[in-house]
Image (cartoon, rainbow, N blue to C red):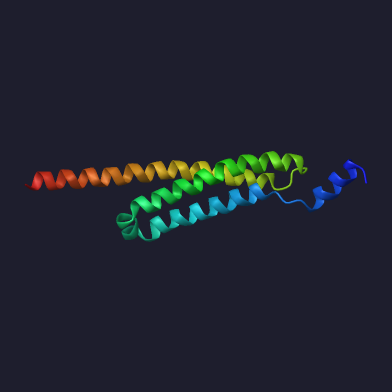
Length: 119
């Protein structure tokens, strides 16, 4: 077989693994965000863990999405849209993680002001 025929044969069965990793990480991050809103008491107790996991899933989804877009180009567009969705969701997760940090710091600062004014 020639290399062109082998490439065409493997392109039909090849998977775009980075795109799938990107969308799984983005889905996990979206589930964590839902967890923040559905269980606000747990977020108050374990805010650092939630925030770290949201950042981590975002930082996995972004490079995997870029790799998935590049690999999708070589695989004739296979899962490129999936990789783009993971990429965009990854950036949204990073932005939301920053907002979580600001909310947590604001909550602590507000509590500090309340306890300071009470004494």
